[in-house]
Length: 395
Image 1 (cartoon, rainbow, N blue to C red):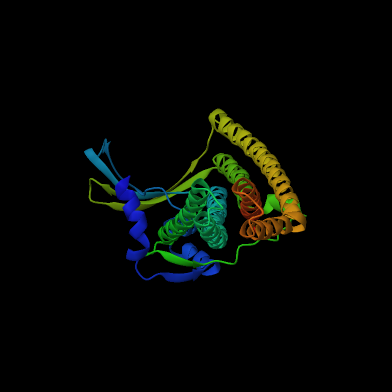
Image 2 (cartoon, one colour):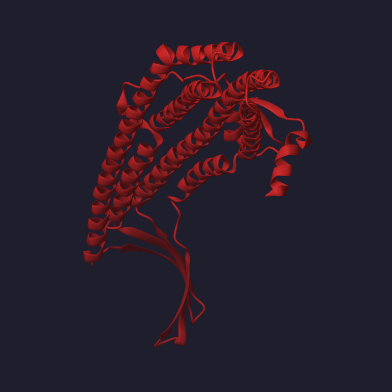
């Protein structure tokens, strides 16, 4: 623990020069070089390539037949040839459709991956903005409590205050300085985390917006159906339908064509050709596979409906949370801010004039600080809720 504390104290001194990045720049960077983003892009490319396998031919058959002939002897006739099975056109079409749906699913997964990365970046920048707001508050409180400690020192020398009062105010001033330093270290660690997310070798100095409420509202909740999770779920339906098409195509006949050469024992050579037709005569197994694929389509549809229901319930909860924090912030803006300012003003004036003892002073200051910290916390929670709503609805 001692080593950790020493590291925290010297961390700001050993950090290398920091790269400054705005939130939009960080988002562009993480979408470009994060491994998850690259993997998602490669997955889309992979499915495009696999579409070219739809018309893949089965292995070519090379055959050599030897048969006896009553006139030409035991090795009277030798046949050497090549045969190739051709896939049914419907099977080629169904397979190509299957890989096209896989490409669309990969695209939806890529969008979801990008949204998750954007959410992480936005959340980090929001937290950094929140910590910066706390740092500003603690800096102001540091100045106030140092002033109180100075007044208490003077009053103690004049025998107007007890030693306990003097020490209590000095201790409170020290606690405020510690909170200020701790907030600075939290900011430093967030910058390191941001650099790791972006794949950069040194901490990033996030150029965050001033800490304030994010204004965002949504009236069209149907956007849930167009967001990435819903698109992925819908692609499962399309994939199941494409798989059903493949199973149905297996009932279609396929053909084989070939050429051959026949060599007779008397030295004569005759060319030839062959055509064969493969028919799925025993269709019971094929019919069961089609039935199973049709049931999978229904399963995918119900899972999609369930996802939409869960997403709408999540959105309703987030909207309720957003409304709750809006009400709390409205109280601060209409009453709390003015009350906190007056508590700070009157406590300083009355304590300096000797009209207030330490107990009353401590109560007023704790009330004022509580109002300010609660405002910061509620604003932070509101903003995080808003960011989650944006991610859920694809904004």
